[in-house]
Amino acid sequence: MSSRISARISAISESATLAVDAKAKAMKAAGRPVIGFGAGEPDFPTPGYIVEAAVEAAREPRFHKYTPAGGLPELRQAIADKTLRDSGYRVDASRVLVTNGGKQAVYQAFATLLDPGDEVLVVAPYWTTYPEAIKLAGGVQVDVVTDETTGYLVSVEQLEAARTERTKVLLFVSPSNPTGAVHPREQVEAIGRWAAEHGLWVVTDEIYEHLVYGDAEFTSIATAVPELGDRVVILNGVAKTYAMTGWRVGWLIGPSDVVKAATNLQSHATSNVSNVAQVAALAAVKGDLSAVERMREAFDRRRKTMVRMLNEIPGVLCPEPQGAFYVYPSVKALLGKELRGRRPQTSAELAELILEEAEVAVVPGEAFGTPGYFRLSYALGDDDLVEGVSRLQKLLSEAV
Image (cartoon, rainbow, N blue to C red; front, side, top):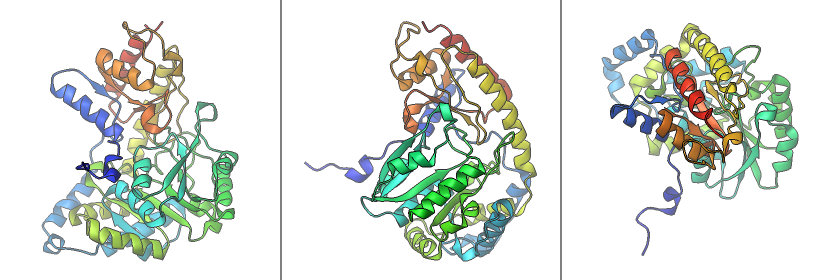
């Protein structure tokens, strides 16, 4: 008897980060004082001037109708201008596709570039959506695993060892979710030149471009390595920079033929992005970066606090992230130890125990392709952050 659900869709895994966040919220709703480190979204409201732009758009009759599938022309131009301003990459507005959040941009990029069997080099740990998008597009993911000993930075040598005759795309993400790793310019240049030398496409996710700390600097591989030419696709959006995760506006920038093909796909999948959200995004990308600077200062403070407190726990090793708003500590030394009458053998089992015993929600490394780690977001209030990590300290110090 045939399955009611297609094999293609049955193979998709639920978003682990959203699942952890949903479970934490359900427990809180039931009266338990859960602190969640799972969700990847700023704890700040969308800036007021952006909200006001959306309110005005909702009153405008022309935004009550269909608009071009590729995005409002004025928003596409503003994204092109913003890209030149922020990363030095010059692109015509016709090469911008506005999408329903960054996730749609991710999927459409792979759906447009990949044929069945094409390989994609993916640096692990990786964001949970990348594997599912590659799989849906018929591609084959090839993991290139990094760890805490290098600050989760990948080398050209590792990439070359993973390359085969079927390799078509390198997925490059810096700053990284889940690790917060930021590749220095010289490494970005070396990786880009290697990709260009071998005729590979580079899909680069730049959603965290403005969230870097200390001496770290964001470097766009598209700008740093012009010899990549028309074989680079940039993914981005307003979600993280402007605290607009719920507005669902992202974009894809690429060569004309790729953007045209991805736009054709979108015209059948979703048509245009909500016009009200597009006008809000227009206000965001045309405005200054003062809002993100205030968030960045808060995230930087929390980052330092969390790293310090986690490294005080015996058996936890937490490198200091240089970007995004996550830490990715190793908990491998705790696995197999006795804790509250149990011996968790995996980071997934340990995360479950922590949620039950300490009422703290973390995402285990299994979700990101590297068991033995946790991802914790520091995009939550200072008091909750300290309380949550203090609970971890108290519980995990009992491990023997």
